[in-house]
Length: 75
Image (cartoon, rainbow, N blue to C red; front, side):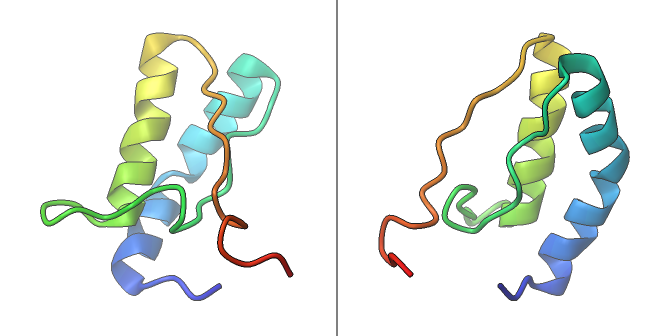
């Protein structure tokens, strides 16, 4: 999967959050995918990913997001 520079900048900024999430909850946060984190006019997908991860840590509960990455393609 190709990731835009803007999205990648947010994903890179999320590395320490991903580590904190795994340490705190004992499981990994869902991997970034455009099908799961849809961009809006105001925010790119990477920013939404980072904010969702931050919110999970602030809410002090693990998020179990069901991925939609294979809803269209099955290979």
